[in-house]
Image (tube, rainbow, N blue to C red):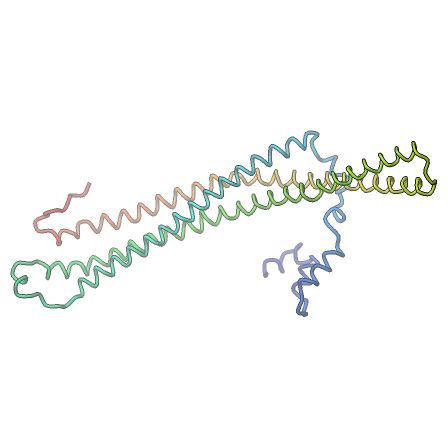
Length: 298
């Protein structure tokens, strides 16, 4: 809210002002009333009626091609985001498992129970037990490194994917509103106009009262005006889609930044955890008599 309230443009919006200052109980109804009075963007945009002049001649073909391409991109980015979320979650789960593993080692090492006489002379458990407790510290460090990797993947990969997906979804929503709203209304108005023209042709063949013919002519003129307005709205809607399409392609290079952040996180995470594992390995010597069972570092 602070970001919106301090924004030089958004802060002056009538809807924002109403939302921030309204003291009643039904703010939604109040906002709807304000919105109805302001009019849609076609009524307020200074180039709305000139939008056709700013569009390429093959805008319909470009729109169809771009929509299909962006639909495929959106589907792929959805899958990338889902996988990135799972990998980040696994990193956090790995952190929890490593921490719990270290705690269990500490629990074993802290056990002060005395050994039975049968085992005390032949078993090295007493010595091993003390070593296990000291090793648990490294597992806490490993856990912290895994948790850091999980947070990096959430902040640098998943969050950026979500931001771009919001942009892609907004574009698809806009396409749907265009086809189900403006375009559908335009086609319906043309269909109605065609029916009126057929009625007019029928009236010219079959004698009818002059008043009914004039009324039909008046309705046809009104419908022609409505169609002209809808055509302007349709071109303005295509103009908005054309602008949004360019915005999508401007942001597409974010793919390389996201992939780079993912690779860097993996490299950093594996390097940091590898350093801890390598520091841990020599400390295992105390668990093996004469290096029995312990492989030398590669």
